[in-house]
View 1: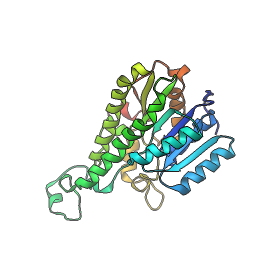
View 2: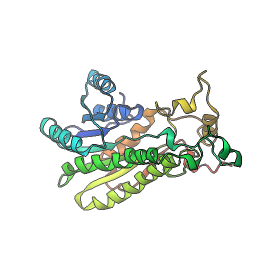
View 3: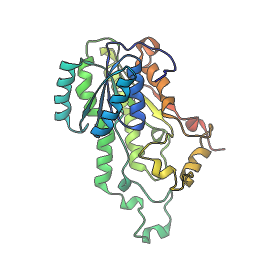
View 4: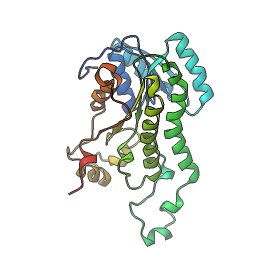
Length: 283
């Protein structure tokens, strides 16, 4: 991978949760290209192995493990293995997360006829279990890896945590109340952690991606014939740059936040990378 600028992460261990996804894999590749020993944590073993091969082919150092970020005992066992075989974590990217269709409404606005349509899912029909699972994945899926891997950072210099928030944390999108709420919690948690860890020299920041095509949202944004969906066109109409982001366009912000020399006094912020979406009033 060609980096937008060079930083030196030699001898640093970077742990990336959700590291085999569309965005996570690009972040993993970038950290490896900057010299870090990258530890990819995800669930899909096949995707992990594919990513590791790509990183190693480009001369990077990477390791991968299939683990559930909601299983603290498994994370702790894995942490011991990482420390013994690779080294203590210096950079933690909390990228695990996702939405759930049963925590999503069918319509953007509630109208009277929706209440009588059994095939539709209104706010009143949202599945509490799905909402709970979604919050667990996004919020606990950030909290638990931080509890486990941030222990390595205490008493050491130039350590940082980067959480992945979302534009939904700034402006909740229609149809996805639970996901928006969970990502708002990530932004809030980022600020809390930044203050809590500040005396230990651990910086905590977050990136809030705007709209990028991923495996999770492709079905909502691209029709079967390859054309943009109505929702996709609506999103682009509210994005001044008029397009979706490319995963590689997150790399510059990631490297800036990861490099102590570049952002050593930056702590507790959430950086939008959204093509102007958060700045646009719609008129």
